[in-house]
Image (cartoon, rainbow, N blue to C red; front, side, top):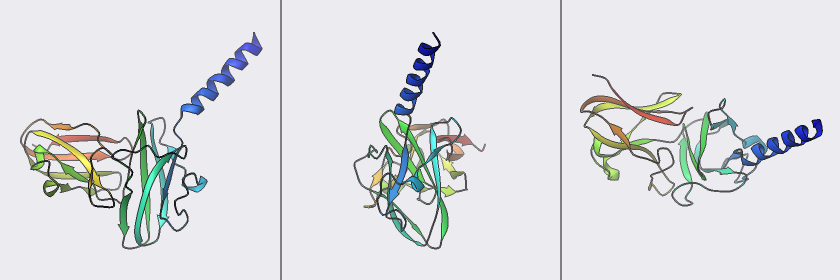
Length: 194
């Protein structure tokens, strides 16, 4: 019986590890150059949240990047790289989460935006820049009841609709609200400041 129990445990542990996320950031970084499984760019889970992160100090420059799972690209909205620019050396924190079979990801050096009917419309010209506050990004202003998403841009300046919030989110009323993305939980919210 002990041998059967031990064998079952080993099989169970193998199955869990086989389906666990194995996220790696890859990009045009000086110490990476698009190696999609580099050990020093491997992300670690934040507790048991299903959200993974990685901190890297990078010199000034413009960088393109993606997040891979077990060396494979399964990100949203095509295969176009994401991009950010650093004016000086900075520690950048990358975040990723597996949503079904799609990797949702961003980094705190990217400009993130709110877009939607609650902030003026769904066209690119209506996007509102969020302010990076270290562990979250926020946009505070007068808005109307409606829907919004938090989005980023790819290297061609096209909106990436599903990197961060795959579903539309609701603003329940009209007035002064704070739209917020919590980095460590990948959760977005709209809170009245009324």
